[in-house]
Image (cartoon, rainbow, N blue to C red):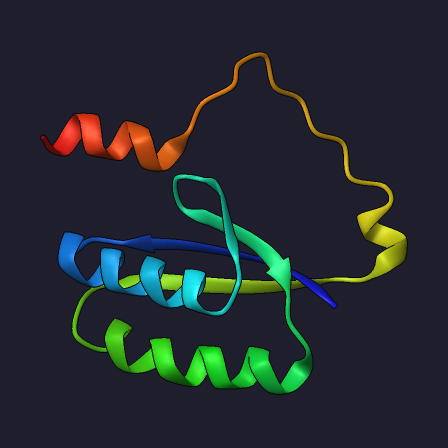
Length: 94
């Protein structure tokens, strides 16, 4: 099943660690604080357990929303630019 995971985390270091963990699970960044990908129930539970430990060290929230195939087929995406978020982060940091 596909999932949308969104977060709001105050600590930069913890937020970056969580983003890396999400990538390790095959999720792709779709917006600065949003990741999308396919995870079965076991992987979802495992991921949330692992990032829960990181989140306990700072203020923030993480929401994982399962998206079934029927709902996935109804997604509407609007965009008028092509931006590589990871590349943008490098420009801001360095």
